[in-house]
Image (cartoon, rainbow, N blue to C red; front, side):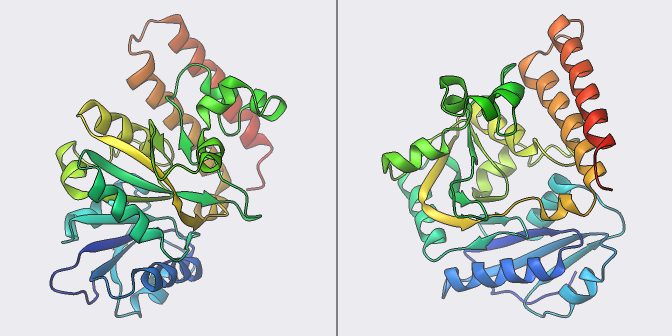
Length: 294
């Protein structure tokens, strides 16, 4: 690990890098411009990139680089960084995020106004500027059909089930300053260290995907809240790291989806719904991997 940081940072900018060196640098630059004079530290965990990312990032003296010998996954990498960070707040960002002016201030204001809020998450924008479905409803048996990539969501995007699962657009349109939601995507979120550590950080059994839903659920069970802040805006085209190994991403998504379902939704191993979910997710994963590019 190497890098230079203020003695008493207010916030730690944390990014996990996997073959996305240039994007990671752009992400960090946008975050630091938005932070301005706010004392901060920057930690990047490189998950055994093969494209020279570690050398590129290691040459920047403002970055504290943690170079892993193997790809440990998203949650485990974030946990590594948070154990080394000194700040009371973690500004977790995906490498393909670009922070727009005023985002950090709006998120910080939400945390300060709501002492029970563990995570304040910004409005994420797709590549075309549209609202990304980054605020989510409580995952249940219907999420696979009415989730962000659900089959029925494509055909019935304005249905009640789809809007309950994906409330971001409605919340943005309402003009609300912030709103309590069940969970938010981990692509961009400002996290209160106290809450994060109290519930045991990310569950490292989730290699990629669904670790954010699990984290938010455990925080809520511990009495904390999760808030979506439309006034904080971050561009997030999506999938930068996943695109470098799509079969790995597909397998990880479906394995993590089942883990979440078995842990939080249907906890009995012998429940027919759990057995059906495992079979359905397995078939869907195999079908998608067969059509993957790599």
